[in-house]
Amino acid sequence: MFGQLVIGPPGSGKTTYCAGMVQFLAGFGREVSVINLDPANDILPYKADVDISDLITISDVMDTLKLGPNGGLIYCMEFLEKNFEWLQTSLEQVKDKYLLIDCPGQVELYTHNNSVRNIVTKLSQLDVRLVAVHLVDSHYCSDASKFVSVLLTSLSTMLQIELPHVNILSKCDLIEKFGRLAFNLDFYTEVLDLSYILDQLKDDPDHQKHKKLNAALIDIVQDYSLVSFIPLIVQDKESMLRVMQTIDKANGYVFGDLEERNIQSMLSCAAGAQFESEKIQTVSEKYVDSDTKLSMGDVN
Image 1 (spheres, helix red, strand yellow):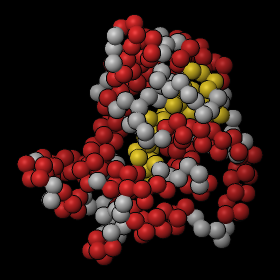
Image 2 (cartoon, helix red, strand yellow; image 1 turned 90 degrees about the vertical axis):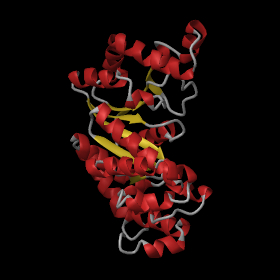
Image 3 (cartoon, one colour; image 1 turned 135 degrees about the vertical axis):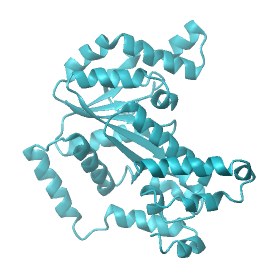
Image 4 (cartoon, rainbow, N blue to C red; image 1 turned 45 degrees about the vertical axis):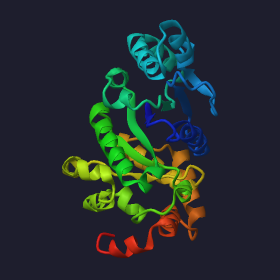
């Protein structure tokens, strides 16, 4: 079986992504099954073929063990790890389908705690070939310090989960709500020369206290040279297609004949239309700071 492990911080759009992707893939003729592994997700916009709430819920954990939301989520995932047989049996019901696994939004589960990684390891032993799809809200691009934090979280997650990894900058159509970007959007998606981020931080009083630390953190990201992002607008077909093709390439998924014909048909219909990259560029140019854009000419 092939599939996606959809992860990311709270509010990054994981559940919306899963709801959109299941419809998008089904439109190509791919048989898709959605697995909800978020015990706090009690209102689902999609039909979950496997739902962790049948095993455990965070409300029960919090009431019984008097834990907070974070501790409750960690307990739930550790409980799932210890009762992996339940998940294994549940997956038998969706055998040979493409999996979309909707995961909790607690960052520590992907950077420090080992439960998710151990569950992924057990799934790989069942010959489930997953790609970690890590969503990050695009509004972090409008704040230099938050963007550095996102880079570190993405890098840490990649090293912790140990899966083929695709980082996605979600909600790119909503960038306008958070003001102008300092640089063109491809600066953030391609993670170009991060020394420019330090220049953006120079007016931050906290940066003056931690200037050397910030520089060291940025050097870590650049030294690994692993983090980059794909911009995504869930409502845009070309954007979803680009993400889908990147993910399929990462885990070696091969199209069936019907799916291949449907994809080619979509590409033919899109000929002469405005493609996703052009739409993203329009967003970028509309909301980028004009002075900074000119100064970034050599970089872009």
